[in-house]
Image 1 (tube, chains in turn cyan, green):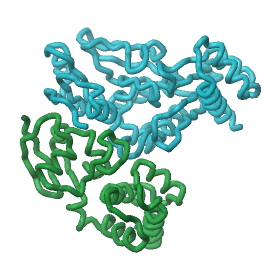
Image 2: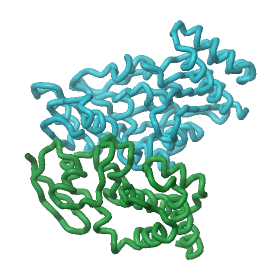
Image 3: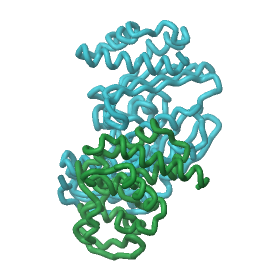
Image 4: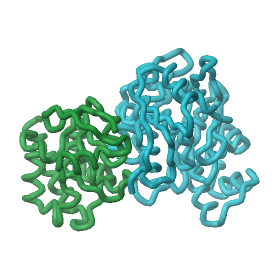
Length: 276
Length: 158
């Protein structure tokens, strides 16, 4: 199918982008790489009145390294991350995640910021960056603010972003040399939307242990109690039954098929982290 | 309607398009570059893959207006691209196509594989091809064709 009619504005100025977002009548959407919004509009699941193309905003392409984190501009593509152009602060995790997103032709255009804001339940960045405990840097009329990723995604395709705000980038925490991570997604075919995603990050030096399940029908699910136990036992006792138990303890209900698949994804992510 | 300027197969073209016109529809309908094929129109089947600024992209989910200033290469403008020419010969030799619908896009993905991943083995080639659907060949001939070009390029150290 083809997208419904819309007005189009391209800008290379953040302030202008924000003013267009607020000033225009109707429903405005920000367009970055067009790899999620494009399909949604072709399928007419999204019908914005106006698109604001931010691909020319150089301010959103910056990559800067600090002692404790890497700032990745919202417009950095999955392909750039896959190719290892960015400094590696996550012991290869974000490079691994980027390489598994859809297909190369999609990764050449799709952006990390777009993925976060689109907030597809099966999206890779919402899951991986949640496990890493990233901070999201947001531009708005009142200036720049930061938001913790834990409370950023409110549900499927819904994030805590005001109508007059855009994401400038993400602060990805730097992992220490003793940190471990695992990321496992279950797809019937490589590049397809995942049926389940398990993500695990543990850094003994900073005391962080985070286990995340994604590709449910909602925002990613964080399993803190299980993560703490896994970190304490170096993953040793986290078998499939333990994974199933951890999922049941979240209070969420899954049908038996989904429960099994999610347990496998979590188990394999943890096993990968501990080299099992 | 908006004015947009693109370099298409080496030629600078200024055209008037509706914002909602995809790059694929613009190139097919206004420029008659019908080697671009449309399958799913949501970025999954890969049939619309062309080169934009030197990289393979899906032309069905990009708007022509958002590609203002870009350099476009389609199969019609690839006769002078030695990598595509070598791949075409190899696809012919190894039965890398039957109906041909997926072929122009398959060639651009193959081009990406042999240039970006010169050490790719058969498993990696198959993984990279996951984003281009072929319903005739079962991929065997396509994989053989790409592997042959990879071996050839390694022998020539390209």
